[in-house]
Image 1: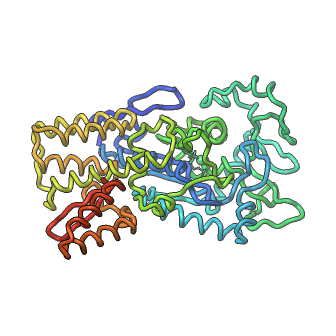
Image 2: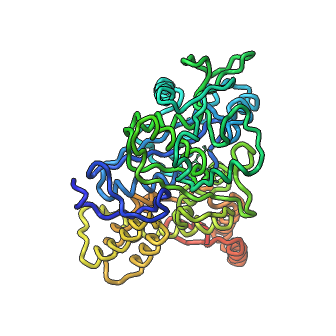
Image 3: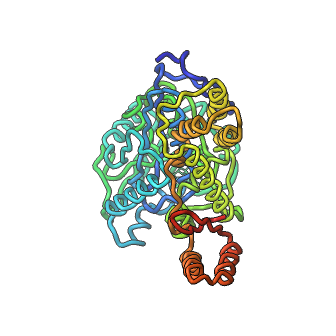
Length: 473
Ligand code: AMP
Ligand code: ZN
């Protein structure tokens, strides 16, 4: 389908620092590469914010009628503890922590990642290549860079010489001279502070679980090269959109650009999109390596649906920092549940397939779409959904249909969501049962007192034909 028939989607491009009208390389198609999880530990809810964002992006293109090719790598090789290629391999730390070999660690956390992602209704990207399955492509790329004179060898690996390119660091607007003159850091044998490893040699005195032969000696690839090699393999050397968290701007994505453009001799990516960080409320960073983090399991332990977290993420623009705290998650859980209940009541179990949208309903849809296509303003789109639900110019079934259409992007199960049973703590459930028993015994004073106690705990009792149920208020 030609681009001219597609709605205009504006995206903020980190490369230009501007919101731009998206124009795809191939009409009607979009290629998206998302930097995926490092699987030496569980993905925390900050990581998951990044993947929810990428999911909303791909679903927005699906919704707009594009043919989407979404690729996300799995970083299973492990990479070094800091962006400067120094420190201990995180995979080795995990192996020591858990007494498993590197392959088993990667397998375990890859599986858990996809379980968590599914709970957040994150659609599995079209390709999810593992770095360890694409070592040959990575070696080929390093060889290409070597042939073109962009590399040098040290005693511990093969490095990219960043001084060989003029615009190194443009994405992050790095002040290279300032950096070189700044703090004195241990550069090892690196020629420039910003040079980075393309291939690392295994230590001479130890065998690694994950190591491969290469033209330079036995070892393993650097972290950045995997994304360059796998994006080229699955999306081509030049593609539309690359996503990641803002932490990737100064080093990882900067290095991906340097090595991809030098190896292939062409522009790498048209649109760079970055999601802001989720921090803990006190401003503390959530970090996998420090072990100080929350996963979606923690939500379920509290009887809160992971979809409440997805809803919470939708209420904040992806370029705004988010502070996580339990109160806002609980408020989001209530907002999410109420929205779903309201729409389900309107749909009344009827099929919405045949519901025709009136002019008024289409006008509401246009406003919702406008927000979504304006740099994925999901918070505004949600606001428009509530305005639409309050409107008196559209029917109940039209409202339900509009909500279900936008749910193909929100993916918060608007028509099918049922709060987890554990949403009501066992203690409150027991009080309800005691109240039911009191009513049966016609002890209304006791029944009323129990109702008051339940209400004081923040729950409401609904007496239905099927019996009494209790819900969060
Ligand atoms: P990692 O597994 O650490 O490589 O991170 C996976 C993705 O999560 C990357 O795109 C990171 O930029 C992103 N990320 C890491 N920490 C956070 C955070 N606290 N909030 C949002 N995104 C994050
Ligand atoms: Zn990457």
